[in-house]
Length: 212
Image (cartoon, one colour):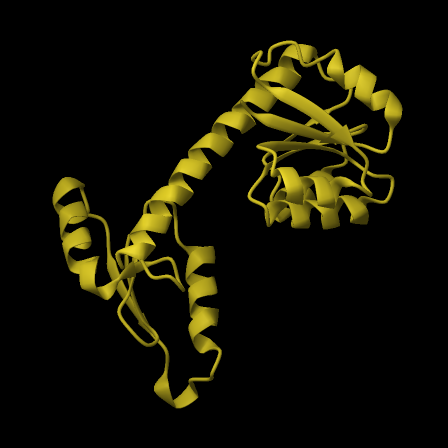
């Protein structure tokens, strides 16, 4: 069963929205709340999907998105009128998709189901990552492969894929300019720069290897 939460300050939206979710499975459940109660309900129930109706004050919408993402919930943004800047800002903060209040019922249901499937995949992935960290295959701090297992993982990928146009890059901080927070800065910079299929290993200190 998937628990879905619609957050809106517009009571009319509850009735309208309920009539549009026609393709959900019988086991799924939809609950409703306003912005004021949303943080407590999200914390207590940890729904699989939050459908967030935009607030008149969009900053409140963004702040709630930030909180919901700390609970690893998928987010669909429900907007009355498309505003490119608002939608892009919401994507930057972590929404999975958006749709208009006037959208066709089939579109709403398709986007909802896609988000539920994505949430299921993410939960399974997070479970695998937890075990990889537990057994030291990836770093607890950086999330990159540990030095102990990097060589085998890199070799296996090189043998199984075509890296004829690839590259192995080693990144290390300048010891003369190293500051106390350079380690986290490098981790953040690498995560912003790598692609989905790139492999990264932490080789200790401020040394990282990237296979692209």
